[in-house]
Image (cartoon, rainbow, N blue to C red; front, top):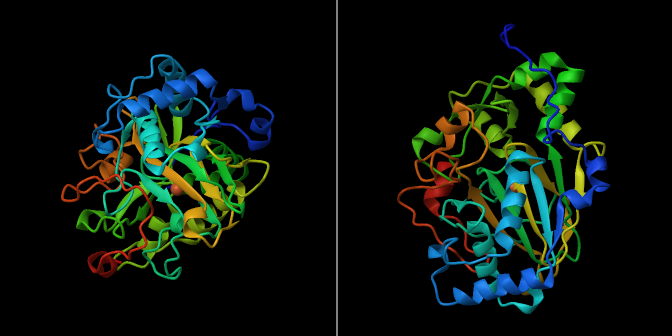
Length: 364
Ligand SMILES: [Fe+2]
């Protein structure tokens, strides 16, 4: 580790929050839809009932009253504490099609939906599809086990709860800015390690050779913020590839420290999903996780969250590492998920049970 690495002093902005404080301040991040707001959303969804969902823009989905509310929420997400929960949509009264239109319509008022996987899915389904859990290609969102804290590959990730779990499955979120501050306080030497690039690979979702090994630090100071980026799967998969720089003992220790702080109830916030809840998170300042859950046998009754990954032109300034690694030229210089020029974007209306293609399996 270069001795010259400057370890920035603690960040004190709104991104540096602690879970136990946020539990006591739900008025700051929890929005209850009013009956008038719900009526406006339903009217907008009905007005695009016959439009191809992928083509629906903010102009097509008029929200004259809610527009200002959403703008405030978006500003909080991108430039404030980094998260919000919107509660009270009567999703149990809606068809899957209407639910998708509502979510997409709200989403395009916040950002541009980008691809979440190798198939070009711009609307994702977080659901247990009973794939072989040992397969390297199985993504965590398709299972029921605990997910480790991580970031997704877009400015914002949104989850819309269409069916809650039988039990468990809470969403856990933690400020990556606060994690950085704590690492720097306890072990400035390890903070310096985490400011240096780590090799990652996202071949499994995008087999272009340029994605075989990319260098991105875990923490990146930029424009007065500390940008965090931690996709554990990408980091550990890279370690198995030929030509990779193997972890040093300091890197292993530093990653373990990040994990232990993220897992500390003094840092994370436990958010229970209720039917109809929408959660939006800024990936650049928040890590997210999920508790294990018990599911229903009936496929149609299983825990089911709709997911959006949104690219936002007015998001935080991104470090060159992020732009170099993740901008495929499809989202105004922002991270555009797993976009591939040869794979058209799609809006599927339920989780797919099929296996990934042989081509993708071979690339692992
Ligand atoms: Fe995620």
